[in-house]
Amino acid sequence: MKINYLFLAAALALPAGVALADGDPVAGAKVFKQCAACHTATEPKNRVGPSLMGVVGRPVATFEGFKYSKAMTEFGADGKTWTEELLEEYLPKPKDLVKGTTMTFAGLKKEDDIKNIIAYLKDPAAAK
Image (cartoon, rainbow, N blue to C red; front, side, top):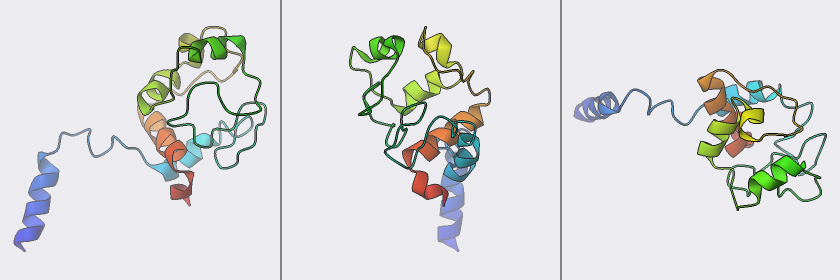
């Protein structure tokens, strides 16, 4: 019984946002449906947009065989990597971060959707 109280005390001691910081890959898979017409996250296959399989941790504009826009290529020219933080900055308004991108998607408005889709992109298999 003491152990249960210890875990409860530890959970209550965490800041409010920490428990949700990683997002939910199952919810992220549902959000990803908005992206699936142009991207895949589970196959190394390009569509209208590049494959997003393994995107978290990958250098920007480097998926083999995809012809990136000049804007995206220049954005990644200094060695940027798609980190969770960069995706959090990019996904709300892609055209604001990468001026001149050819991606037509306006962006995700809800912070939870952004966290969830990043969780899905990190590990699509976790959504099954």
